[in-house]
Image 1 (tube, rainbow, N blue to C red):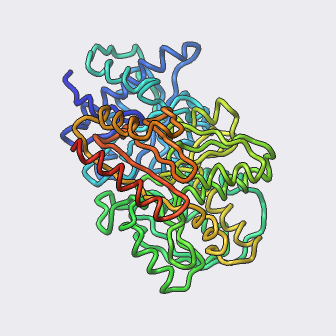
Image 2 (cartoon, rainbow, N blue to C red):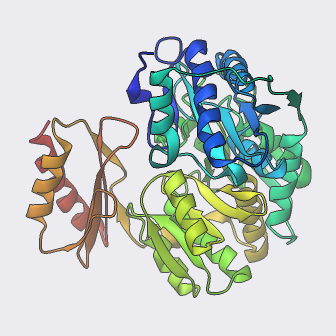
Length: 457
C-alpha cells in the first residue's frame, strides 16, 4: 500500500484529512498497531482503549481504526469523546494494553491524526513504534484473526479523570475566583467544566461549544494572536486570571490579572516549586529550550534539574527513567506522575495555581511578574531553510567559544546569553529560542543568529 510517510512523525501520526489520512488508512493503522502490540504482549488477548476529539472527521476515523483492531482480534473499549489527558487516564484506569486517540492536537481544522500509547499511557514515538507501524501499513499483509475482537463502551472517563487530577493536587484551600476561560471550541471545555464544579468560581466561558472547524480562532494558545481576546476579557471583567486550552486539551496556558500571558517556563518553575514541597529533593524534568527560570526555581527549592530533548514522549520517557514527579515543556505541556501513568495534568495545574494564589493572598501578577522579569526571551522564531544541518553547523562554528550541548539540535551558553537551535520534529522548520540577562544582549545575539540563518533560506 502506498502511504504518505511524512505523516508518521516523531510523536504521533498527523496529516491532512481525506487526502493524507483516509478511513482506509485508519483501518490499516489499527491492524498495524495490533501486530506491534501482539509481538510485545503474548500472554493474554489485547485490549485497546480508543477515544476521539471533536474534529469533524474523528468519528469516521475512529470507526475505521476500531474495525482494524477488532479484525485483528483485539478487544476495544470506546472511551468516547475525550480530551487527550482523559484518554491517557483511561488507558491506565482501564488497565488496557494500549490506546489510540484520534486527534490532530492543535493543528488547523483540515488535519487529523492518531496518538498511540502502550499500557500505562506510555507513548509510542517515532523511535519506539511509529515507523514500524508505517512499515507494516506499507507491506499491507494483514490477516484476519480467527475471532473478531469485542467492543464495549465506557463513558465516565472525563468525570473520573478530572476528579483524579483534582485529588492529585492535594486538598489545600481555594478561595472564590473570577475566571475567564477560552477553550477555542476544543476538548479543554470538557475537563474545565468538571473543574469548575469542584471550585467556587465566577466563570466567563469563551468559545465553549465543540467545533472541529475552529470558527473563532486557531486552537493553539502558544501563539499570541490566539489569546489576545482572552487577555482583553480578563482586563474588561477585572478577573483574577484567564485560562486557555488547546484543541485536544493537553496544553494549558494562563493569563494573569493584568491581562498578560504567563510564560510556560515561569509557570513550569512555579509548579516545580509547588511539587517539591511534597517531594523534597526530587528530580524535575524540563526541555532544553531556553527558560532558565525553571532550573533556577528547581535549584532554589532543593530539587534536581533534569534537562530533556523536546517533545512530550521524550520528556515522559525521561521522567519515568529518573522517577520525576513533575515535568514541563516550553510549549505548555505539564506532566505529572499519576497512579495511572505519567502524562499531562491540566486540571492538576489549574488546581495548584488557584491553591497557590489563595495561599499567598496576592494577585497572580505579583507571583509571576518577578519571575518573568529575571531574563529576557526572544520568543520562538521559526525559519524554513534549504539545509538544516549546514545552517546549524555555521552557527556552531560562529559560537564555538560558548558551552555546547547537542542533546537536541545545538544549545550554546555564555554567562549573559544562551540559545537553542533545532530542527522541528513535526514541520520542515528550524526553530530558534534565545534568552539573555537583558534586552540589549538578547536583541544583539538574536539578530546575529537570525542573519546567519537567513543566508541559508
